[in-house]
Image (cartoon, rainbow, N blue to C red; front, side, top):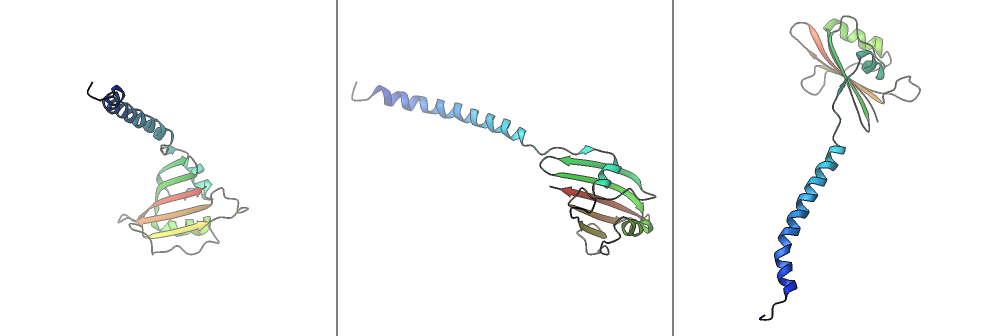
Length: 150
């Protein structure tokens, strides 16, 4: 055998096999691990629960309400609804009487927004709540309410 070692030849021939099998095992394991950490999907909940988490109730005249929760490490409730534009500020003032005036300097596409922080003892489960509203030509306000604790 002209000076070649059988171990070196075996190493050269087996390396691609070992690397290939190792790669498949690593990718498969990573896929299963990612599945365990996937972000949960929103789940429908009663709007009384979603709004109540942030210290609110559905305003009079609201319609088309849809509410969800996403909970994993943190808990986030969302409520989407429409309300007559004239009722929106009344609802905010009644719901959060000590809050500052809502702002008109909001992130697009919103026309009116209010961000709130709560302290322990405020009687609200959430740490924060946000109300973002976009005014429609029909005279309604499309409202996105979110409440978060984590």
